[in-house]
Image (cartoon, rainbow, N blue to C red; front, side, top):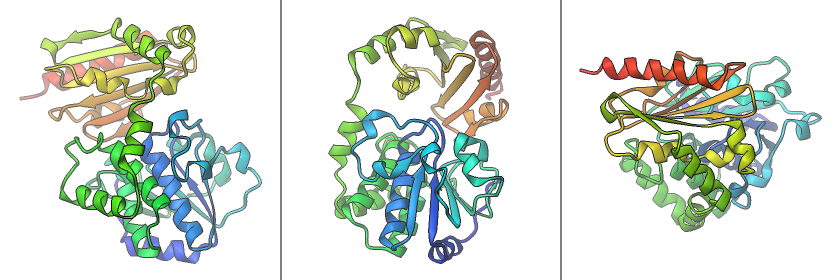
Length: 327
């Protein structure tokens, strides 16, 4: 259920509150980080007290971008009191991980999201699957509340750029370019963002990528490709799981591949699955079968207490079924 209350109701709630906790999802990507950072900066411009929270460590290459230093861990915010909790870019409450403890069993006040699999878990849910990124929704809110300054614009452009694959995905339309133009006009530097996000690979990460390609399997006449990164591989290359960000895109880039899957085992005993499609298959439906979710062309799910081999077998089997069901 993807509820969409009028944005005016969300804005009214933001005006009413005085102390805000803004939460993003675990294994954060640029949209989660940018949306949290931008909304915190917007609320602070309104002279509200606001803190951002993401349970997992933010990948190092995002550090230094605008607003990222306003995002803390649940442990750092245990004594922070708030009257309004906002969850962004999360289709389900489980996606916020350990940050849920800060809610003390209460529903979040607001959920801003663009995933079609959103479960409508907050008091006010504004979910718009037509939006290219959650940052696009935060942008619409922000421009009605405060003048956009360079820091807010940079955080928003980070979310918009990364969730559109730097403006190459099918979600990109005229509206996206108009938003990007407004953000650049407000002082955002797309080159700074692109350099941070796209040009950060260490030598060890490149070696890990090479080893990942050594596990590559291509099936179904070249339409299904999958690979894995085991916990042992991560240890051997002295990499964390965040080092695999973007690896699944390298698999999808193979000519003829319709479904690309990356299985990442970390921590030991957990398997995180990233699914990508070129458009014929809705991979969010595959992810939903295993308790995950996402978008038709980009989705994910996780397994706890399931061996890597079993997780691979289950998801690959479901992907084969999806391909066989195509006309």
